[in-house]
Image 1 (cartoon, rainbow over the protein chains, first blue to last red):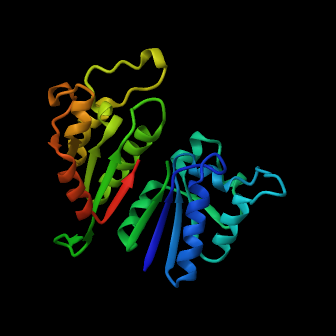
Image 2 (image 1 turned 30 degrees about the vertical axis):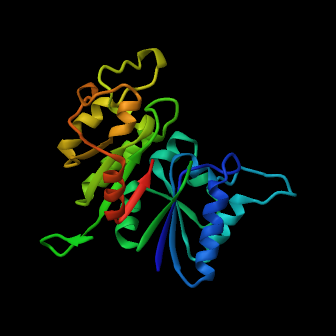
Image 3 (image 1 turned 45 degrees about the horizontal axis):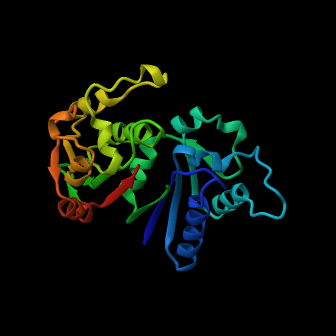
Length: 118
Length: 127
């Protein structure tokens, strides 16, 4: 199945980012195609390269970057990013900024768009 | 999911507004998402549930909050061909509201009917 993920919460404050990641990982393991993770609302903060979480905790930012490296598109909404100080020069590797039109295209293209949020 | 006359896919996409219009940004950014998606010729609807019904309340004044009000944008949605607005009857009644308290004409449905509509959607986005 072709799956798209919409993540609407930032890292750490809320478990949604962890759940979205675990879901993506499990879906890939099952042989599904996770086409993209679209970040909206505070979700865009997930791809900031400015964060330095404690060493003994999971690094959500690196997780998204690695998932991107594996071919999953990691996309932050431009309007939401502009509000929150996320721009091309602060993005983790293998992520990019795009518009809500891209999310619409994803919603049309995938078999299931799964939302993670509050 | 259907196809339009040009053979393009048309999906049923429902946005669910569940929170008060102010206090968090979810409803406002949700509305921004609706406006963009409306340009893609999809079958878009919005349902208003729980405190989400307050988003449509008439005579909102956000001046004291110093936050831009956007209730009027819901009124303009028909200009974007977003005409399917569903309001949960119980949510309205629990808050002492009537359809005439709302800024725009909506379809008031019981929870089961909204549930049935959700089931028919290709995509449901909780805002």
